[in-house]
Length: 495
Image (cartoon, rainbow, N blue to C red; front, side, top):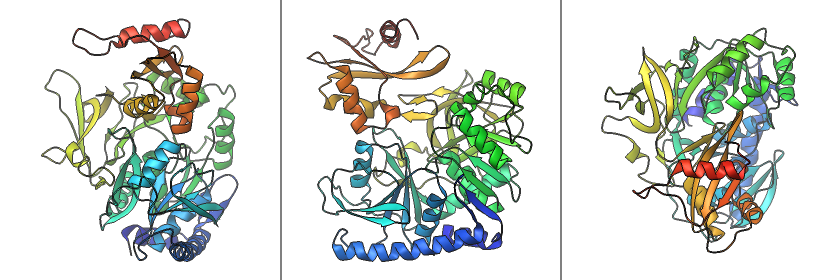
């Protein structure tokens, strides 16, 4: 029996009569969650035997690799726990991933089964789907075209999640049960999470923001976890606040920005103690406006997929730091006294490795065991201040985008060269822009449609500008300022 099964089981039994999970449509107590997860474990065991009898998967007796491709719901949590009890390894997949990402995950990670609440755009090796606990279950043929070498999971791996990584495709991070448990314990201790709280979470469970701060921590403390899916409009957020009356709110910056559009007094805030924001730091102006208008005090958080939760700010200030290290976390910056430097972190909840890119994660860890984040920051009086990204990563509204991945998809359409960047837009989030060259005149509408069939929507450039040559400096580096001017001209002067 794995570590997570023991921890979750003990927590469920200890809090049996308390409310466990609510998605606005369905609510279950811990004892009901327990029974439902048992049914899922039994049903999956039967399904796994059936799949093997049908020959969809070769090598019966091996640990099933099961990707959950779905939005937040009570069923998601039930299936996650049921899979752990059955001995399967859940792979938590972003439900916005498109055909390109899903085919890559299927082949490079040797996923055996997808459990999904929507159409599954996997082209290669799809076998007959089964109906499973309100989800569809689609098994993947082992001998499907495009299947790569099957990399074996580490013996201690109990769950996998994905990072955009530096490879141009989703990197699959293996986590031991101990690492996931330690992350939750550090969060509960570092944020002084008490028993029987009410957590309202607008982040997807596949994401570290909710996975590390809401899912297992709610079980450990016997709290009630409220989950939302769909677009977090101001009206939707207000309805959930009124229903949940949370003590903790977890969301990305765009949600908090949308609350400034709400002119009336927001309901359900009388018990709110922690409003957690992550991914991209929320501007100090927005944070101040939220506090003055609605009394919401934003607590910034910093975490990395590969390392787990890292910081929390118990007393947010106007300076805008992302907080102090959580228990078991050590942070340093590679500055030389001249200003910000690369953030390097070491934690007790680090992922083990990238399953589908052997050796890549190890290369990001220095000789002292610190993960080189690619983020830039500075430490003042023990608090971490995030100052930007190093290298080629793009972060728009909390969504991380690898320009290499986008460029690869553009090249499929005949684009010769491309430069992908975030184009600033006055008064709102940046747009993703691509300046590109091609031997022929390109129909940008057709190019965008091609991207939409291959990428998640947030990775598709909103602005496409064809040029004869990518502007470069005398050193051969792309000239971002000139390309920003091209985009501003394309968009009528907005930048």
